[in-house]
Length: 158
Ligand SMILES: [Zn+2]
Image (tube, rainbow, N blue to C red):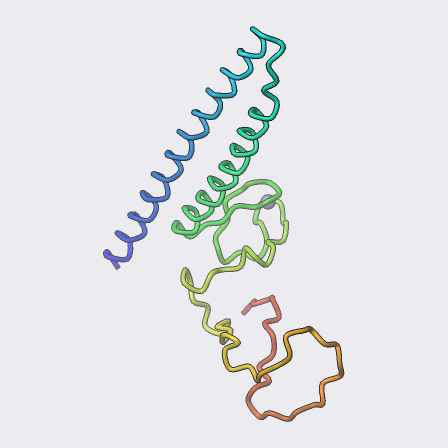
């Protein structure tokens, strides 16, 4: 247990380090944007729009990366954030305890964080060789005794 906790702590530190590095990069871009803008202020013949936009785009992407890292940190802590009200919830919650918003499917508990007893969807590695294109043709009702595991219903209330 202690080892497990240590690993979580290490992961969190690692994510935090990555976030700090990304924030440094953002600061660098802001700095460059400031210089570019000032250059244009000094000489209106210089068009820096492209240079500034490129950096703004990069900053937006980095913010997204940081958000993902923050989500990973929360997960290490057994938490997830409500997309509506930003309240931190337990990973197992299907609805936000504060505002009642439903958590999207991609907020579902990853198997490596908490293994729910009956939600272990077997990977589709043993699928019969099917055509790549998604045909809507009626299935010929092949009766396979065990291959009819029902899809997870989404509600896992006990
Ligand atoms: Zn909420």
